[in-house]
Image 1 (tube, rainbow, N blue to C red):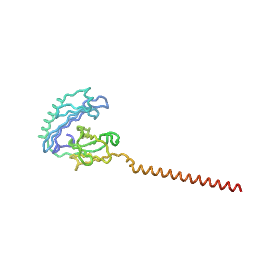
Image 2 (image 1 turned 30 degrees about the vertical axis):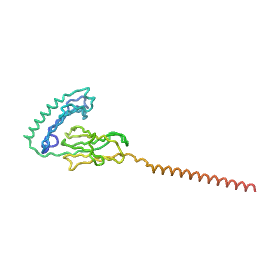
Image 3 (image 1 turned 45 degrees about the horizontal axis):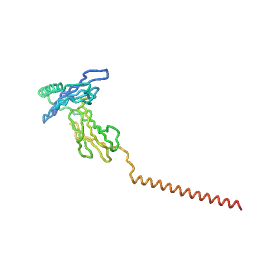
Image 4 (image 1 turned 180 degrees about the vertical axis):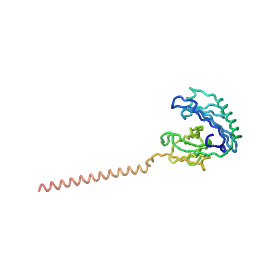
Length: 255
């Protein structure tokens, strides 16, 4: 049982994380699945996923009963029947009931997530981009990730990954928010988890240099023009003074 010696009062979970086979000494295929029941609503949920070197290859949508490839191209070179995952899910639910009936339910230690927010690529004002909220090292696998723009919740275009199990039986998860960087906008990724006393807000805003305003540009041009005029005046004065000194010198020489 991941995350502690007992079964949490609000969560009953069965988790399997194993290396299915070694392609090479440094390459591993991981298969992970779990079933959980959340109280007091007794809502059940689960997951079935396969990864290569910790990168997801596919997972099975247990509600839609279909295989979802991480990249569509993967499905051209391999196949997986979702029915196998559904059978495993049914077996997991059966074992979940057995654990619930025969286990001494106790409170386990909750592990809060570590959260980071960063853009997919370099930020340019007006250039469409994607913000990524990464929650890592949390247990159990119950978490809520919400996006806020200028303090208001955003749902359009938001995408989330499934839970990615770690080798230590904790979890990680990504949430993606497409956005167009605009000056003055700011974003927060709000994360709620049983290991956090209150919701965690991770702040982000575009870090781009401020362009010179029109007034600043006008001032710079005016200063440049003024300096030019002063240089012309000073040059003219120096020329006249030099010509006068040469004239006086010539007069003295004639005497």
